Length: 255
Image 1 (spheres, rainbow, N blue to C red):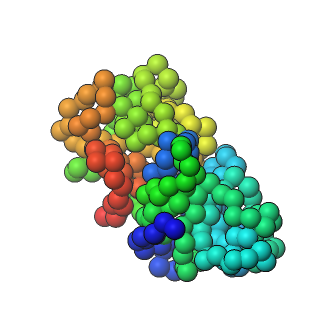
Image 2: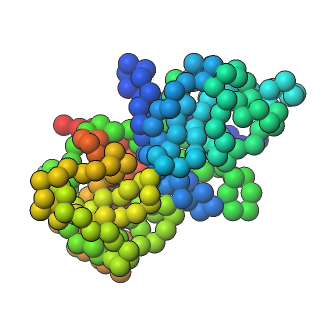
């Protein structure tokens, strides 16, 4: 049986469920990388249910994923394609089996862990994968360490470096817009990149947008993302920091 290591749970000190971005899924599930998961009510257990923006992916807490079929398993957070039954206390998908995309054991039903080793259905079978959930803490690209991405080449390199949706990107795949603030945006609901000029007075149209930023004084390497260190700020005023240079992720607190 795989061991599980965890860090503190995602969520505010008030215990309120909050939206987050998922990163670290394996290649077979790489389309999930960069997806925004938002609270979508609660189950009968009292634990929050999270749903991906525009996609049928769910994260929920299940005290016993096979119900009354022995042996009883440990409580766990589950990533699944099937929506959980909100009236059930155990076996929330109702299949009397433990089928899922990924799971992590946890005794804390208030929030999934910020970072943990999940047992995930990957290429070649199940294996441990370090997945992380990035809470939003508020900021934009413009600060002493970071700046906006203003070219299609840099925008594509950032998205490739972060392995958003498990894909590689090039400048020809960019959608352009004139709303602001200007910069490079990832639409997690549609899995598309948008480069905006900021020439109009209109605000960004979607709550599923994530603005990609780069460190100041970083040379642009448009053929690959090597040498970059990126972070992603969720709008409106929501920050998740992703250090893709070492393929590790961490949270940057707002000032």
